Length: 315
Image 1 (cartoon, rainbow, N blue to C red):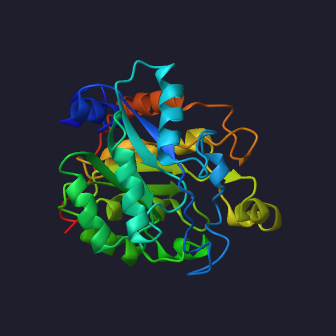
Image 2: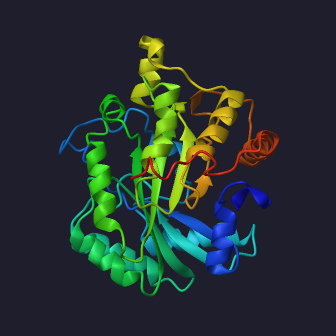
């Protein structure tokens, strides 16, 4: 059982070692695509929490080719780690939101790089097609392919207030379309969106466990400069009830207990640059420090992933 090992949940680093047999580094790629809630197709302004500059490395510039970005990223990380394998991480904005042949050519360019063993593709649930999935399914026969959908919330009210411009049903449909193709399926959730109660946030664990996902990324809501939320927290601060670090650690341990036990947990928090972060400010707590505190509390409370997961409730 999970709780008898060093970790009381399925952690990403162990998953990577088991999958590849060694350390693997993601190289972020920016191909300059937009999003349907930015370009007017479904809306304008993008998600209210999103400032792409808060998580895009300096070498990621869409004016550079995919190959150039990979070369620069690999040069950067190879000087820090003796990494033997790399994944091309199509991270910024919606990386399936363009003409199909263009998308396919960019993915093909990435996997043709001699140091790349696979792709990680971030996108929206409403920006996937059977034709692209057919292409990814073929790639998955020779390369590791991970498709990450920005779920963000399982509540339509939250998707509306954050200007996502899609529904949770779109999310369910996207995973149904994508499953059983040899593709690793990931999900992103933001914990603490405006208007969500603690019970509603914990219920995300119940709902997300019903999806055919392999990996899950969680992170706390952060207010960063240059976003609509940065304006809202000034004009309507009552919208927000941001976690303190200790509150979030307590929450995450409970969330883990309610989560389907086979899901791989890739991360718990996000770290925006200090010069961009408005709130919450957790006294410079780093990811490894947060994880250590979660691990300690899980042991103290004798909690493990899936302890409170109810298979009958998933039916």
